[in-house]
Structures are given as C-alpha cells and as structure tokens.
Length: 111
Length: 178
Image 1 (cartoon, rainbow over the protein chains, first blue to last red):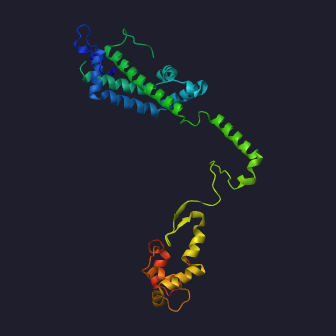
Image 2: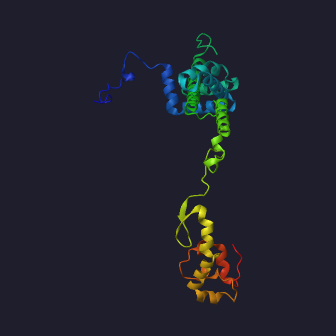
Image 3: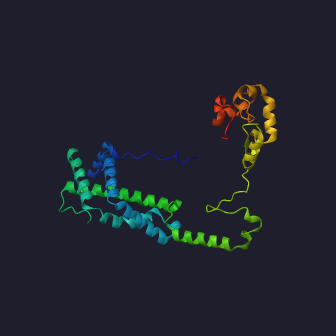
C-alpha cells in the first residue's frame, strides 16, 4: 500500500483551541494572499541584482566551491557561506525602501 | 544588523524587520541554490579553467609528439581544432536532380560534368532527346547544349533550380556557363 493512502488527516491549525495564529502569521498570510509578498520579493531581487549584491554572493559561492570541490558542496553549505556576509552587505537605501513598503502595507492592513 | 530588539522598536518596525529578514533569507536560499546548480551541472566553465587548460594542453602536446600521428594512415584523418576528423572524400549520399541517380557528395561535381553536358556523352544525350526544340530556339549556334533544358518536356528537373538556364529562352543559344 502506498504511504499516501495511509496518510493521517491534515491537522487543521485554526480549529485547535490551544494555538491561535500569531500576529506574524496573520500578517504573513495577508502578505501572501494579496500578492504583496511576491511583489516585495521581486523588488528586492531586482534591487540586489542592480547593485551587484547578487554577483558578490555568487563570487563567494564560486570561491567556496573551488576550495571545497564541486562534488562535495551542498546547498546548505552555500547558504551558510552567504548568509552572514549577505545580511551585512545590504545597501542601506535598499533596506530602507523595502522596510518602507512593508510598513505601508502593515498600515493599510490595519494591523 | 542585530537580532530582534523589542524594547526599542515599535511593533511595526519590529514586524517590518522580521519580514524583511524573511524575504532576504528566501533570496539567499535562491542564490545559493542557483550557484549549487551551476556548480553541479558543470555550467560554470571558469570554475576549473586552469585545470581544464592544463589538461587540454597536455593532451595536445601528447598528440603532437606522438610519431604515429604524423604520416602513415592517420595523415588523411587529421584532427581539427574542434577534435573532429573528416574523411578525405565527403561521403554523404543524395540524389542527383538531373538524372536521379544516387551520388556521393564528393563525387558530385565530376558526375554533374558528365551528367549535364560538359562531357561528350551528355551532349549526345541532349541532342538526341529534343532535336526539334533545339532547332527552334538555337539560331545556328553550335553551342546548343543548354537550350533543351528550358524547353524540353522530357524529365527536366533543372528548371526549378538553375536560374541561368531559365533565361535561355530569350537567348540566341549562346550561353555563358552559370
């Protein structure tokens, strides 16, 4: 018998009285449902490409891969390589722009 | 960028930062995944460029130094810069549009000579098949080999592809070789 047939029923989080959705979760859902999250991602992606951030990250990856050897590298490795530098090297203007838009969304979502 | 710091931030600011971090993490994972893919698929030629060049140059050197490669049977099968070898005579086979025979590409030009009219036999063939047309269109010029090809109703597959011949109907029978 396939596993999918015997799968337990999907737990319905909303009906569970012990756990109410947190504010973050509510907002997250609103962001996704309205399509704003996707738009924000695209905006951020575009900005990061324009300013060369993505190229820097790719260079970091390439250097790491060269050192470690192509066949031993995992996605996880690369994420750990990029994350600290990546978070730190975001240009302030881009960060400000995105934060501004997110805040505007929060306001109009009346949260 | 410090971690979440509830005391100094308004809830909105904290939330915004949280979501910004969320977006950023997703993008980071995307970039990492893309680089990982490129590396695994070997799409990034620069990755091992030096090793690759070394390897290729040693290969080339070996081939050049190898005495069995120059002269002997291999001299006809010279390897070009892409590593391909070509047989001395092109050996693709196709159908001659004039006579319908299967011809090897490397032998096509000499075949055409004989088939279309430079040769003695071809001229005889043309003369015999449509003497009337030849007499009508050529005004006494001995070089009349090409005229039948534009007018004859016999199997004439050249009429489509040979621009020089089509204009022949207006000529006096003297034709320049196309």
